[in-house]
Image 1 (cartoon, rainbow, N blue to C red):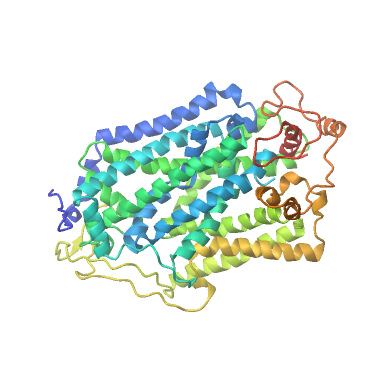
Image 2 (image 1 turned 90 degrees about the vertical axis):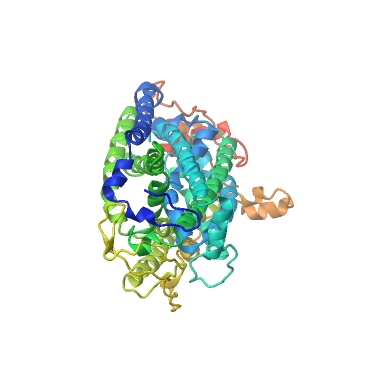
Length: 593
């Protein structure tokens, strides 16, 4: 097969048939892919069998003994939510809509300080397995290996792709001519899909949901021994996120430079935008042994990292929030670990079944971020209400969450319905099929999806967005912002109407001390911002703790993670390491006492 030239942006690749495409996946490719799966399995077996004595209870299994290193934790943070969705979705986003999405990187710069110095310290001091009150070592080390593979695959592909179209200059020139370069769209309309406002402000609320209060990420914070190291892991994670964002966005420009005269979507070569990157990889590097296998390994690495994180977190939540509180007799730690492992298998099977539902949601990147906003937005509002507003009570919290869920699902589901009926059109940047071969009948579907008639040989462009009124036309990037705001506003109003909580009697570990975060302010202003939280709080007495622990096992292996210190909890410095005086109360919280 002739190699496409940079100048022509040739589409001779469209003559590849399915048999030829499959043949290109050589024995070496299968070996590379198989080695990844074997490596992931080996890590799980090692920590599940060889290190079994270190994970004799659920906390050891789910939190890795709380002695993991900063780098594995940081790599796992990156892998959890920048996965196959990023590898497939971001290049397709840039190819179809341009580079405006890259601006979301600025929201990362706001999210990480909030996660590291506001939300994370609260969870760390409480030391809870579930944030709502996995073989985590295997997950963290598997994520580390998978992230290395993911980075390697992406770099190899974009370097080879850039060289094929003439280098970085040619890529940039093609993107400029094709109207793909856009960074400073300040349109204030909430209906515009991507602007600086939607990506920075809306992106902040979307990603602080993930890095501030999401179970999968919080579990990683708790795997390291101190808050300072947890903050370091978050900052290292920021570098990885920005690197992945830039690399994947540039991949979208490279794909456009190659196919600018023969759009695979319009010509029918692929049926969805998420198939653009796999097509590009096989077209560009399919003849190089091992590289297609490396790419598939990278995609599977991203998927495995997300799935392993989610399964481990679901198992933790189910055990801590549903099984243990509803049992009359306490479970042994060995029994808890076994139940957690069984739950992980069950959730894995359920996740596989849901694949058939997810494929109906459209473009993978927008679908994922929409779901994050619709589900995570109310969750962010709930934790923000509880951590920042000490007057909130449980009635306000419940009312706020249900209100937030109702409003955002009304908007999100309404958008999908309007889109399905053709009343909402998302405008895409112009594409061309002028360089496609002039077939008389059909184009061959190189990904094995059947044949599709050629639509035409002229430049194509989506209809303009219908600027109709109504919340359904709001950008999906605002979903988390709207949902969390509704939760906080409704939650506070209901709390004040039904009898506000007395901040002076609250456990200070449950509230973010805003005054302590602004050490440059005068003391009286700092005291005002702390709202007198906890000044009348009475911590449990030592003898009360002894009676509370009477029903728990007392063998030496009972508390492998937390040293029992028989004294009341002291105040906590949320900017430093956990004070030993809080360990006893943290353990009480873990057992739901």
